[in-house]
Image (cartoon, rainbow over all chains, first blue to last red; front, top):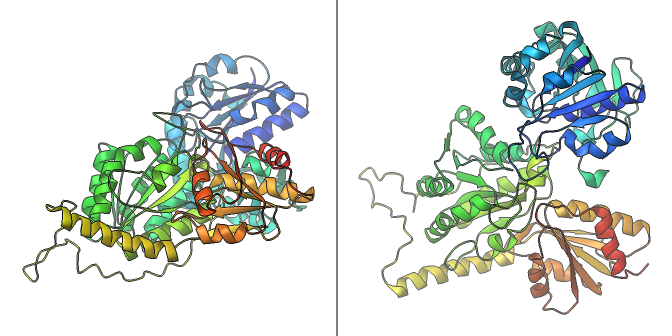
Length: 217
Length: 347
């Protein structure tokens, strides 16, 4: 059986960027990595954008048919259960909110069977307007669990302001993240800081910012 | 915030009390945000049975003097065009948002700017104009929505935000400005119940005699003349000494700015002119920005539409070249830079 990590969260919380970082990191450690883009709600800025980079790094990418085409709703023409039962490390990037998590619910029985080998991390961003209060982020987390029919196992604090993110931005998100984690009784897996920001603090994990407008690349 | 969400939040903060819409990619987050928040803000969100119904609901709501808005993407705006003409003919203020996608026809869901002509020249039947704002960032979408509501009320006419899928879907930090609610006295025309205290008001775009209709149109065009003099706005970036002035609006201007910066690093004297209002087109501003230029380039996500306004603004006195991608394909900074180099910019 393989290790499975599911990434959920609010629209624009940074799910695809976190998934991409986890995949690149695991690939760099020589692991066999598969990324599933399960986003059926957002037509732009998704893991399917990184097909070339993934392929260059030996990461298998499975995307819905018609992702990045002109179809509003991509079709899921793959079976996560079958993919999950092959070897290696599997990352599932889910669409935003409980709306996006509905697609995950379809596979809940198969995924829940993984027991301790299954992680589902909830990505939070203090600077997203509709989840700026811890109570709003908590409510959404439970709504996602209802739609996914899978329980979260941890919180990833990805609070950021895009290209304006600095040390102060991430440091001032810690209380917010702790309040959410305490309220739902889950650990903070890590808090993120973009690698370009200078900050030596054990509580943060440096990440690359892959998801951004291409004129900034 | 995501661009579409910022448009919605800005509208509510600007005092929009009625939103009528119908879902279409890539603007759906705007309507979804309104659905979640409008009622909490003491307003009305209604998903209409079609785009045509939605725009006519805007006509009805605006007739009573409340701030009303609808949003859609390209094919949906075409459906709304009849209603927009009625709104213009009835001298009603409202805000219409177009988060453009590829066309013609059903086209595609990726970003486009191919509705420039539609927005600025021929949105629907009859002699009329809309105020059309072209934002280039999420922050500017916020600022322009606030401004559009204010100017629509000032001039009693519809205003449009001409955005595109890229701006609607992208995430950027925003700061919501303190909004000073200017009092617009609508008591002379709003059809909000006379309570037996005054003559009733009639909102109408039908005139039975040609002379009467001509008079209303001519009066409206006198207002448009004032707007052309006072409401134009543009950003000039490194144009002062530029030999080549690259013109772009909306998200394309972000791409162009990257290319201009790279060209400047190579010593090429190039600048960017970005209309923030596309109707009225900033004619004087472009003439000033290109006074030292020998040639211009228009970069658009279309087969070339704004280029006509550039040529008109300059009376075809300087050559204007074109580079564009269409169908939902976004030009890259490298492509624009290659075009600038091919035009032989002086180093």
